[in-house]
Each structure stands twice: as structure tokens, then as C-alpha cells.
Image (cartoon, rainbow, N blue to C red):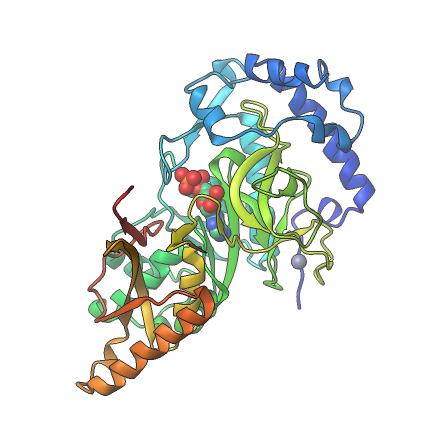
Length: 436
Ligand code: ADP
Ligand code: ZN
């Protein structure tokens, strides 16, 4: 396999030089953090009054976690560590789970962030010759502009379409011979379903790769999309609090995501006790941003669940890999007492070949109990009028779901286009249960 680097020296640095760089950058971040009253209070409580109090990476563990509410309570500028004059960019989270949070960047912050994105792009084997269609929405969301800068720095031809308007997206893909897409899994699933309407087939296009992120998706979804489009799909992870995309990226081996450890310190904790877990154990991802000075965030609880791989990657990069995001601590559903992540349901559905590209999860209360209905769109070709075939498929989906989540779900089968479509992050769970 061809392996290319954006910055070979840093990407393959040995552990001790990587850690030396982490400590140096952590000190810088702490010096900025101490300019905010929020961190002054927080750090002085644990005996950190100057960057020199950070002697080793162990000292990081003394610092309490930060959470989304810290950012909300300090809205809009309470955690800003530089003069507004130095700020060149403002972004905000998409607010999937409530009031958005605001992030500030200096020119140098944007530069360092951009560099990590270029690194991710090169790690997937893309080059300056590629035509890059950015289908993440631009604006306050970091997925648009963030990746745009990274792709431009690589020298790719960047087409900044943003999200939505599927017909136009397809036309551009065909006419400009787009080779690389940046898009959410939900939207890429949806586009495939729209292709017949616009009389375009994947083989009329020139696509080679797609970077998929901004929401969880399972390996069966990746495999399905790779097959439907005939392309390679790479996982890209980030969150606005950690600048945006570019925290972790898959390399050509597509075996989960290298966290750029000169940019972020990654820890995995038990989400209930806060205890740090050893590599290999699943828990909540905690990240320290080492490259942003305008708004320092130290030990930020992402609410995303993953584990750290212990095996090195054959690409030669030394930056450790995290698994795909297995769910968010705040998207777990409790259905009649059983804990279920929507991603478990997705994984089952997408591994059944007859299931098409869209589904919804619906919860209601019936006779005092939770009732789970899974609504699934099938490929058009399956609606032949043979009802017994559909019935047996229903049974198969139900059995597979029960085996995975131990819950009896009601299954509804629908024709393509029946369920709501998503052109950005999907919102697939509708919870209409009566609250006690
Ligand atoms: P939010 O959705 O919290 O309002 P963001 O727009 O910053 O804010 O989205 C970041 C979140 O998106 C991450 O915390 C994570 O839950 C999800 N996410 C981003 N990339 C991925 C990915 N590759 N796989 C799974 N989830 C992802
Ligand atoms: Zn690798």
C-alpha cells in the first residue's frame, strides 16, 4: 500500500519526542488558560499558577474535566483568552443537544488546525490533483470552512458547495469530475436514493474517495456506501470544541482513526466515575486541545464513546488510533430498562442487504410500556407484490435486532422516499414516550 505523509517527521515521531512536544504545547495552552478567570480559579485549586507548574504529562491529570456547560455558562466571551483583536474566526457547534457553544481562533490557531486537516487528507492517499467537493454546510459549523482550508492547503481543487440541493451536487460531481467528497453519512446515503430521479449512476461519476464524519456510522454502513458508489470511505472525526474536523482521521489502511497527538491529548475515561481507563477499554473520549490559544480547553469531556487501539498501524504513524465513535453518552436510549444506542440498531439494519439507505427509530408508550418501532426503507426492486417475501424479511430484521439489543421491535417496511431525508447530520430518533 502506498503511504504518503504531510509531515513525516511529526507523524512518525517516537513516543518520547511526541510527549516532549505535548508538554511544551500544554504549557503554552496553560499560559493562555491562566488569562481567563475561569481557568485561573480552576487551575489555582490544583496548585497550577504558572505554566512552569506543568512538569510532566502526569500533571495534566490533576486538572478537573471541562464540560459543554462550562462553555455555555461562559457564553459568549468568558473563556476567551486573547484580545478580540487577535481573533480571526468564530465557529459554533451545531447545537444537536441544546444551546450552541462558541469557539474563537487566532490566525495561528487556524493555521495549526488547517495543517492537521491537510495531514488527514494526505493520509488517505489524496493529492493536489484531486477535485474536492465539500458538501458539509459552511457557516458557523466547522465542517465546511475547516476542511475547506485543509484541502486548499494540500492544493486540491476545492468546490465549496456546502450542504443540500442534491441535483446541483450531482451535476457538479459529473461536470467537474469530482474525485473526493466530504459529506455526512446520512447525506451520502440519501443521495444514492436520489440518483435515478436525476438519471445519474455512480459509474457516470469520477469519485474515488469520500470523507465521512460529523455523526456516528457503523462498519456495515461504510461497506454499503463503498459498494453502492464504488469508492473508498474514510472516517473523519472532530468536534467544534476541539476546533472542528481534524482531531482524528483514517489512513489508507482504514482501520480506525489516528488522533493527531501533537494537536490533542486523548484520554478515555469511565463516564460514570471519571476514572482513566487503560488502552483498549471503551469509555468517554476526553480531549485536551494543544493548538488553540484563543479559547483553551483542557480535558474536555466529549460525551463520545470509543476505545484506543493498542496495536500499531502498518502505515508507520505513531499517533495512536481510536475506534470509530460507538455512540454518545447522551444519545443512549433506555427502552423498557434496556440500554440501547441508536448505532447498534443502525449496525444491524445496514448489515441486511435488502435494507436500503434510510431508516428511523420511533419510541412511544403503549399500555405503560415503551414500544420501539423501527421504520426501514427498502430498495425499490423489492416491491414486487410478493407480500410473503416482505413478511419474511420483516421477521428477519426483527430477529436480528432482538439478537443484538434484546428488544422486540415493531418493524415497518417502506418504499424509498417515504421517510424524512437528511442533507446534513441525520436526526433518526423520534422519542414520543410519555414522561413520568
Ligand atoms: P454538536 O453536534 O455537539 O452540536 P459538532 O457539530 O461540533 O457539535 O459535532 C461534533 C460531534 O459530532 C462529535 O462530538 C461527535 O458526537 C459527532 N461526530 C463527529 N465526527 C464523527 C465521526 N466521524 N463519527 C461519529 N461521530 C462523529
Ligand atoms: Zn495508519
